[in-house]
Amino acid sequence: MRSHDSLIVVTGATGWVGRNILEVLQNMIPAEEFNSNVLALASKKQIIKSSAYSHNKSIDITVENLNIFPKICKQTNKIYLIHCAFITKNYISKFNTKDYISNNLLITDLICEGISQSNNIKAVEISSGEASIFDDIVFNNINHKEINNAPYAYLKKREEVEMSKLIQPLILRIYALSGKFVRNPKIYALSNMLLQTIKRKPLIIDTTKEIQRSFGHAKNISELACCWLLSNKKPSNLPLSAVSYTTNIRSLARIISDKYDLNQPIIKLNDYKLIDSYTDSEVNFLHKLDEFNIKVTSFDKQIEETYFFLKNIK
Image 1 (spheres, one colour):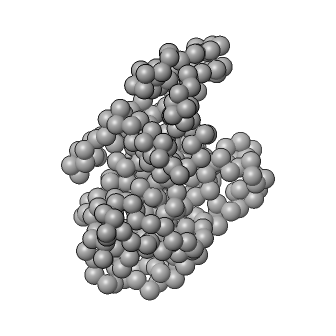
Image 2: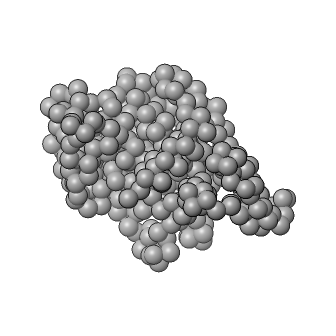
C-alpha cells in the first residue's frame, strides 16, 4: 500500500479510538502488509491481536513505546500520523493536578518533537470537545486558576495550538463516544446503561441536571481519519466536532429500555432548568463523512455495536 520510505503511525493505539483506527486500517491493508506499513505506539510495549482479519489470517500487532516517535520521524521520509495518545480526564484523580498536567505535556511535547524532525508529515489529531472551552480566550493569557479548573480542556487546547504551529493537522474533537473497544465502560452514560441492560436491570436516572450529549461513532471517526489521511485533501482551518447524534440522558434511557425490552426507566430529575450540555452540531461531521463516501452509522446501530462488544468482553 505504501512505499518502504513511508509509514502510518498510530499513537494511543491501545485506547478506544486507537483500536478502532487499527481495525479500519486492517480493512484497508492486507494482513501480510500490515506490520510493514503501520506502526502502533502506546505508553508501553505490548502485542495485540488483529481484530478485522479472518481467523486464518490473524496477525500479532506489536505496539511499540511512544518514546520512539521522534526517532521514527527522523528516519522515515513520509509519516502519516494519527495521534490519539493522551491521559484522559478520568485519570486526574489518580494524579495530583500538577502531575497530570506534566505527564500530558510530555506526550504533546514528544509528538511535537517528532513532527519538527520530519521533512514530510501529514497528521490527524484526535482532540476533545472540551478544548472548545478555551476557543474564545487568547491562549497565552490563560491563567493558572483557569488551567487548574479545567486541566484536561486546557491540555487538549494546548496540543491543538502547539501541533498547528508546526503543521496543519485535521483536528477531530470527540464529545461522547459509542462503539467497540470502549474502555472503563462504567464511567460513560451509554456503556454503563448497556452494562445494566446486559444484567437485565431497569435503568435508573438520578440526576440534579438535564444531561445532554452529542455522540460520535468510534468507527465512523476512525474511517474519516484514515480516509482523509491517505487522501490528497487539505484540512479545514477549524477543528471538526466528530458527532452524529445528540440526545439527553432521559431519552437515551428510554431508547435502550425499548430496544432491549426492559421495564421503563426510573427517572429522578430534580431540576430540568439546570443543564449539563456537552454537545455540538452534527452538520459538518456528517458532511465530511459524505465527502469521503463513508456510510453514517445510525444511532441504533451504534448502540447495538457497543452492546455486543460489552456483552462479549471476556
